[in-house]
Length: 199
Ligand SMILES: Cc1cc2nc3c(=O)[nH]c(=O)nc-3n(C[C@H](O)[C@H](O)[C@H](O)COP(=O)(O)O)c2cc1C
Image 1 (cartoon, rainbow, N blue to C red):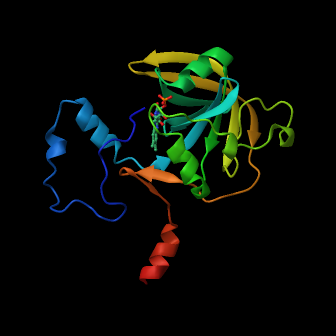
Image 2: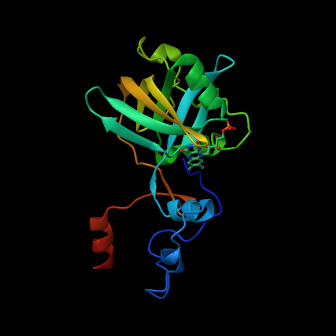
């Protein structure tokens, strides 16, 4: 929803110097630049939303992903209204959400290039290796893929909030999750392991 901009900064552990001197805190007006910079401080998981374009698999990197409810199993993603992906979602009423692992940085980079061609044939599981009921393109090496049917679409400003009812879930094996925050790709670490390293 708030795509990364010039928020690049230091990763974990580098707090702002001078506790208490936080001018942002005084900014009562939520202008877009302040909002973008504030959202840049959120670290979270990364997905690639998959659709079809010209009958070929297509992907777009999306961090605005959430589960909504268990019954019926529902997720949401927020995608720019002008994206090829939004067009595919409108047309087919289907989309996939692939939760990325640390092995998938290249496909995340490919699928986040504004205006670039984002065909993903080289990264998807062959149709013949998927259960017949799976409709959306599935990315190899994902932590999990949700194959969704559009339940509701709500435009909000520049974006569409897309609710998807989950029709199939593929989670072949556990992998290390990819994170994005402070304008860069990151990997998490167990707090317990970090504490042991310091002790
Ligand atoms: C880590 C990351 C997260 C992103 N999250 C979103 C998002 O949640 N929604 C969105 O519309 N764009 C998001 N973007 C930007 C889109 O990936 C990018 O603008 C998109 O691929 C452009 O597609 P288009 O060329 O079809 O317009 C994100 C980019 C990155 C690098």
